[in-house]
Image 1: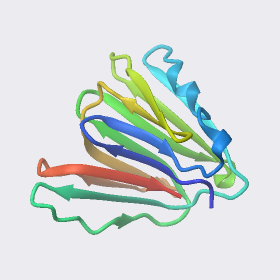
Image 2: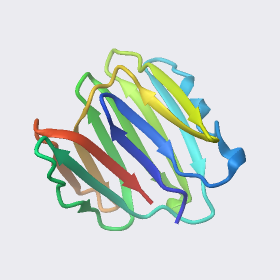
Image 3: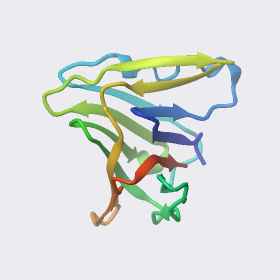
Length: 158
């Protein structure tokens, strides 16, 4: 399994890559290069990415049951509430992930924070996650609508 990629919200959409190597900070800095309403990062891995899991926490503190996706997903599209989206596309039999942040007529504003050699990227103008679409290799799409009571949503790709 490749190093997990997490896309979550905590007021705005955040993108994290769980790496244990202390020299790995900054490996997704290509997300800062916003061109024509989008930025792209490609991640190579020796172990294939195969699964995605979506869950959310509601305003009463209840955790939704995680929505696992069949292995071999093709694409995960995460919709923010201000026309900013994050797309994670599986390529090369899962050994490559293409992470794309894009807006519909809006440039994504991407910032980074780092602590103890761990870096996270925030799309500060994206708002919360509203919907997650997961497309499998056959082309079928499973759409997960996050209810307005969802105060925290996480998508984990492994």
